[in-house]
Amino acid sequence: MAKTDRSSGRTVYVCQQCGREELKWLGRCPGCNEWNTFVEQKVTAPARSPRAASPLTRPQELSQIAIEAADRFPIPLSEFNRVLGGGLVPGSLILTGGDPGIGKSTLLLQVSALVAGSHGRVVYVSGEETQHQIKLRAERLGIKGDNLYLLAETDLEAILEQVEELSPGMVVIDSIQAVYLPEVDTAPGSITQVRECTMRLMNWAKLGAVPVFIVGHVTKDGSIAGPRLLEHIVDAVLYLEGESFSSYRLLRCVKNRFGSTNEIGIFEMKGKGLVEVDNPSRAFLSQRYGEAVGSTVVPVLEGSRPLLVEIQALTNPTSFGQPRRTANGVDFNRLLLVTAVLTRRLGLKLGNQDVMVNAAGGIKIGEPAADLGIALAITSSSRDVAVDPELTVVGEVGLSGELRAVSQPDRRVSEAARLGFKRCLVPEAGSGGLSGDIEIISASTLREAIRVGLVNKKVN
Ligand SMILES: Nc1ncnc2c1ncn2[C@@H]1O[C@H](COP(=O)(O)OP(=O)(O)OP(=O)(O)O)[C@@H](O)[C@H]1O
Ligand SMILES: [Mg+2]
Ligand SMILES: [Zn+2]
Image (cartoon, rainbow, N blue to C red; front, side, top):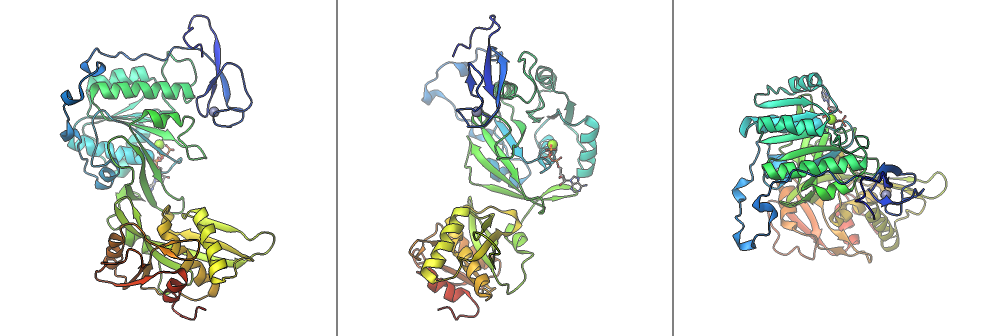
C-alpha cells in the first residue's frame, strides 16, 4: 500500500476497530468484520522517534549481551508483583485495561505512591482528570505523595519534555486514549493516534530504561478500546476485572514478555483503595452457609495458586420455549457438556429445566477441573438434596461419564485442608500418593462421585 507519499495529500481509510487500511471506503471491515468502522485519514509517515545511535540498534552477538536480571525491582505490593512475574522491569511498557470505573486509576495511583516511596520519582500523567481531582483521590487513599508528581496534560510531546526534566523511575499515562501527538492529524483516541502514541512511549521507555504504565479503556467486547494492535506493541497487558456487585477485583496478566501470564492478583476495593486479599479462598467462601442445596466448593488453580471457589446451580422448570442454560463465571461449553452427560449417563431430567450456574465472588473459572463441581451442584439442585458441606470436589468429566485426572491435585487438596474441609473428592486417575490433613475419596465415574457427594445418598 502506497503509504510513503506524504506530500500528495492522499488519503486512506482506516478501520477504527482493528487498524486495517484500505484505499477506498468499505461498509464492513474485512479484518475484523465490524460495520461502519472506516474513517478517512490523510496519509502520514509514522511519527519518528529520536532514536539515538546506541549499540542497541546494531546487531550484537547473543553471547555478548549482558543479562541484567537483577534489574527487575519488586514493589511493596505482593499481589501486584505476583502478576508482573516478580516485579517491575525497567524500560517495560505495561498496558492496564479494565471496564470504566473498575479502579484502574486507583490502582496505578497506589502503585505510583509505593514506587515513589521505595524507588524514586514517579510522574502520574492524567489526561482525564485535573490535578485537583487526583489530589482528592490521593487524600482518600491516604497518599502523602513525596516524590510523586502529577501532570494534567494531553499533548504527548509536551508530556515527555516535562517528564524528562524530572528523570523519573516510573511514569503512568492515564489514559492512552486521552493523549495525542500534534504531528499526527487525527483526533485523540483514534486508532492512529493511539498506535503512534504507544510506539512513541515504547521507544521512550526503552531508551531511558523507565517502566511506563498506560491505562487503556476497554470496549464492550472486552478488547482494549479500538486497537487490539496495542496489545501487540506493549510488553505486558494487565486487566483489572470484577463484577459490579462485588468488591473483589482481580488483576490478570494476559501478556507478559518478562514472565508467566497465569498469575492473578486479588484485591478488594475499599474506601481506602485497593487492599490485597491475604486469604482469597476464605474471602470467596465467607458468604457460604452450611448445608446448601445446589452448592459445591471446588479447589481451582489460578496460575500457581489454588483457590477454593463456591459453585452454585439452580434448576427450574422452563416456563416457555427452549430450556435455557446460563453460565456465570464458568465456561458455557463445559456447562453444556456437563448437562448433556448428566442427562444421558445419569438419567437426570434436564430437558425441560432451565439451568443456571454461578461461580461466587465474580471469579471466572476456565478449567475443566470444575466440571465435577458443576455436575454435583446441578444434581443437588435438581434432586433437592444438599451436598456434603465438608466436602470439596475436583475432576474433569468425560463424555462417557468418566472422571478424568486434573493437574496438580496435591496443591488443591492441601488448600482444601488448609481451609478446614474434612473430605476431598478427586478422580481416581492421579489420586495415588495424595495425602494430607484431609480424607481423600477417589471416584472413577461421575455416578460414583455424585453418590458420595450428596448428603442423602439415594442416587440411583
Ligand atoms: N469513597 C469511596 N469509597 C469506596 N470506593 C470508592 C470511593 N470512591 C470511589 N470508589 C471506587 O473507585 C472506583 C473508581 O475508581 P477509578 O476512578 O480508579 O476507576 P477507573 O477504572 O480509573 O475509572 P475510569 O474508567 O473512569 O477512569 C469506583 O467505581 C468505586 O468502586
Ligand atoms: Mg481512571
Ligand atoms: Zn477492522
